[in-house]
Image 1 (cartoon, rainbow, N blue to C red):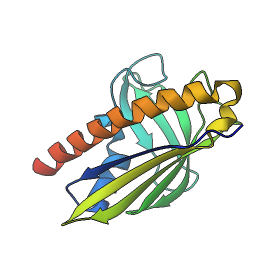
Image 2: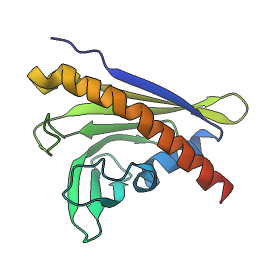
Image 3: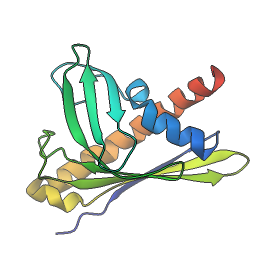
Image 4: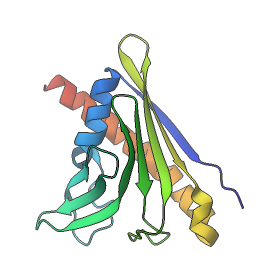
Length: 156
C-alpha cells in the first residue's frame, strides 16, 4: 500500500533565513498549545540544530517528550526531520516517517515554505487515517507559524 505524502505550502513575507529561524528556533512559540503528545502542555518545542539532534517538547516542569530527530539541517533552505511518533502518537525510536520543510525565495524578499510529510504507509493499517489527520493539522499549524513569524518580524 502506498499513501501519497501530505504536502502543504505557505508564503511568508520575509527571507528564507528568517523563515527557517522562526520555524526551527521558535516552534514552541507558534505550535498550538495542547496539540502535543506529553501529559502536560508544552512550554517549548526544541529542534537541536544539527544532524542527529533531538526534536522534543518540554513542559513547565522540565519533562521532555521526544518526537523524533534531525536527519538534515541545511539552513536556510532545508530541514529534514524523522517523525518518530507512531499511530498512537507515542514516541517509538524504531519507527520513522519523514517531515521535510523547504524554504525557497519567492517574490520580493518573501519565502515559500513547503512541508512534505512522507512515508505514511509505514503507519500500516492506520496510514490513511493518520495521513488525513496530519493533512488537516498542518495547514492550521502553518498558519500559526506564519502569523507568529509576522509578529516576530514586526517586534524585532
